[in-house]
Image 1 (cartoon, rainbow, N blue to C red):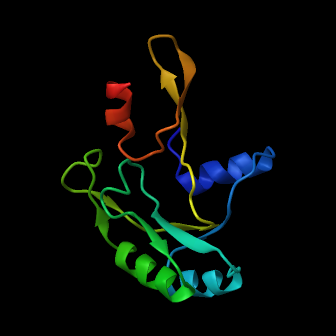
Image 2: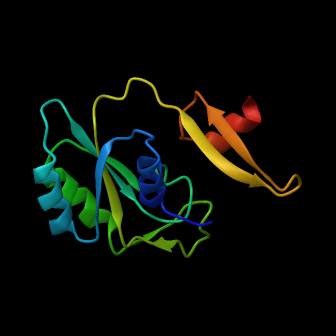
Length: 142
Protein backbone atom coordinates (compact mmCIF):
# COMPACT_ATOMS: atom_id res chain seq x y z
CA UNK A 1 0.00 0.00 0.00
CA UNK A 2 1.48 3.32 -1.07
CA UNK A 3 -0.29 6.14 0.77
CA UNK A 4 0.67 9.66 1.74
CA UNK A 5 1.18 10.77 5.33
CA UNK A 6 -2.10 12.70 5.37
CA UNK A 7 -3.98 9.58 4.23
CA UNK A 8 -2.37 7.47 6.97
CA UNK A 9 -3.35 10.06 9.57
CA UNK A 10 -6.95 10.02 8.30
CA UNK A 11 -7.00 6.24 8.82
CA UNK A 12 -5.55 6.67 12.32
CA UNK A 13 -8.28 9.19 13.16
CA UNK A 14 -11.01 6.78 12.04
CA UNK A 15 -9.70 4.26 14.56
CA UNK A 16 -9.37 6.69 17.45
CA UNK A 17 -5.61 7.19 17.28
CA UNK A 18 -5.00 10.82 18.27
CA UNK A 19 -2.96 13.23 16.20
CA UNK A 20 -2.43 16.91 15.57
CA UNK A 21 -5.11 19.14 14.12
CA UNK A 22 -4.31 19.25 10.41
CA UNK A 23 -5.40 20.10 6.89
CA UNK A 24 -4.15 19.64 3.34
CA UNK A 25 -3.79 22.17 0.57
CA UNK A 26 -3.05 22.04 -3.15
CA UNK A 27 -2.56 25.79 -3.60
CA UNK A 28 -0.76 28.42 -1.47
CA UNK A 29 -3.91 30.53 -1.07
CA UNK A 30 -5.84 27.48 0.14
CA UNK A 31 -3.06 26.88 2.69
CA UNK A 32 -3.31 30.51 3.85
CA UNK A 33 -7.12 30.40 4.23
CA UNK A 34 -7.03 27.12 6.16
CA UNK A 35 -4.15 28.28 8.37
CA UNK A 36 -6.12 31.40 9.32
CA UNK A 37 -8.97 29.12 10.47
CA UNK A 38 -6.56 27.09 12.60
CA UNK A 39 -4.66 29.88 14.41
CA UNK A 40 -4.39 29.18 18.16
CA UNK A 41 -2.38 30.94 20.89
CA UNK A 42 0.98 29.29 21.45
CA UNK A 43 0.66 27.08 18.38
CA UNK A 44 2.59 27.00 15.14
CA UNK A 45 2.46 25.03 11.91
CA UNK A 46 4.51 22.31 10.23
CA UNK A 47 4.19 22.28 6.42
CA UNK A 48 5.02 18.89 4.84
CA UNK A 49 5.35 18.05 1.15
CA UNK A 50 3.26 14.96 0.33
CA UNK A 51 5.36 12.63 -1.79
CA UNK A 52 6.01 8.90 -1.65
CA UNK A 53 9.55 9.18 -0.28
CA UNK A 54 11.39 9.51 2.98
CA UNK A 55 14.02 12.08 3.93
CA UNK A 56 11.63 14.91 3.08
CA UNK A 57 12.90 17.09 5.90
CA UNK A 58 16.52 16.89 4.75
CA UNK A 59 15.39 17.82 1.22
CA UNK A 60 13.42 20.90 2.30
CA UNK A 61 10.03 19.21 2.23
CA UNK A 62 9.22 19.80 5.92
CA UNK A 63 9.23 23.37 7.22
CA UNK A 64 8.07 25.20 10.35
CA UNK A 65 5.78 28.22 9.91
CA UNK A 66 4.89 30.61 12.73
CA UNK A 67 2.01 32.41 10.98
CA UNK A 68 -0.62 31.78 8.29
CA UNK A 69 1.40 33.95 5.91
CA UNK A 70 4.47 31.77 6.48
CA UNK A 71 2.29 28.70 5.82
CA UNK A 72 1.37 30.21 2.45
CA UNK A 73 5.01 31.02 1.67
CA UNK A 74 6.25 27.55 2.66
CA UNK A 75 3.46 25.91 0.63
CA UNK A 76 4.25 28.13 -2.38
CA UNK A 77 7.92 27.09 -2.19
CA UNK A 78 6.95 23.38 -2.25
CA UNK A 79 3.85 23.05 -4.44
CA UNK A 80 4.51 22.49 -8.12
CA UNK A 81 8.14 21.51 -7.53
CA UNK A 82 9.99 18.22 -7.75
CA UNK A 83 11.22 17.11 -4.32
CA UNK A 84 14.50 15.25 -4.66
CA UNK A 85 15.61 12.92 -1.87
CA UNK A 86 17.95 9.94 -1.81
CA UNK A 87 14.82 7.78 -2.21
CA UNK A 88 13.35 9.54 -5.27
CA UNK A 89 16.29 9.43 -7.63
CA UNK A 90 17.58 12.56 -9.38
CA UNK A 91 14.26 13.24 -11.13
CA UNK A 92 12.45 13.69 -7.79
CA UNK A 93 8.72 13.41 -7.10
CA UNK A 94 6.13 16.10 -7.85
CA UNK A 95 4.66 17.97 -4.89
CA UNK A 96 0.95 18.41 -5.62
CA UNK A 97 -0.26 18.65 -2.03
CA UNK A 98 1.03 19.72 1.38
CA UNK A 99 -0.04 18.53 4.80
CA UNK A 100 -0.14 21.31 7.39
CA UNK A 101 -0.20 20.32 11.05
CA UNK A 102 -1.04 22.65 13.93
CA UNK A 103 1.35 21.90 16.76
CA UNK A 104 3.14 23.18 19.83
CA UNK A 105 6.77 23.32 20.81
CA UNK A 106 8.34 19.96 20.05
CA UNK A 107 9.84 18.60 23.27
CA UNK A 108 10.57 15.04 22.12
CA UNK A 109 10.15 13.27 18.79
CA UNK A 110 9.58 9.59 18.13
CA UNK A 111 9.47 7.57 14.94
CA UNK A 112 7.05 4.73 14.26
CA UNK A 113 6.28 2.86 11.07
CA UNK A 114 4.88 -0.42 9.88
CA UNK A 115 6.66 -2.15 7.02
CA UNK A 116 6.17 -5.50 5.38
CA UNK A 117 8.90 -8.02 6.12
CA UNK A 118 8.78 -9.91 2.85
CA UNK A 119 10.90 -12.79 4.16
CA UNK A 120 8.32 -13.48 6.89
CA UNK A 121 5.31 -12.21 4.92
CA UNK A 122 4.27 -10.28 8.03
CA UNK A 123 4.07 -6.64 9.08
CA UNK A 124 6.94 -5.34 11.18
CA UNK A 125 6.65 -2.40 13.62
CA UNK A 126 9.64 -0.07 13.74
CA UNK A 127 9.86 2.37 16.66
CA UNK A 128 12.66 4.74 17.65
CA UNK A 129 13.11 7.38 20.33
CA UNK A 130 15.45 9.18 17.93
CA UNK A 131 12.67 10.84 15.92
CA UNK A 132 12.26 10.63 12.17
CA UNK A 133 15.30 12.51 10.87
CA UNK A 134 18.12 10.25 9.72
CA UNK A 135 16.17 7.16 10.79
CA UNK A 136 18.12 4.93 8.40
CA UNK A 137 21.43 5.99 9.99
CA UNK A 138 19.99 5.59 13.50
CA UNK A 139 18.93 2.03 12.67
CA UNK A 140 22.46 1.15 11.56
CA UNK A 141 24.08 2.76 14.62
CA UNK A 142 21.69 1.25 17.19
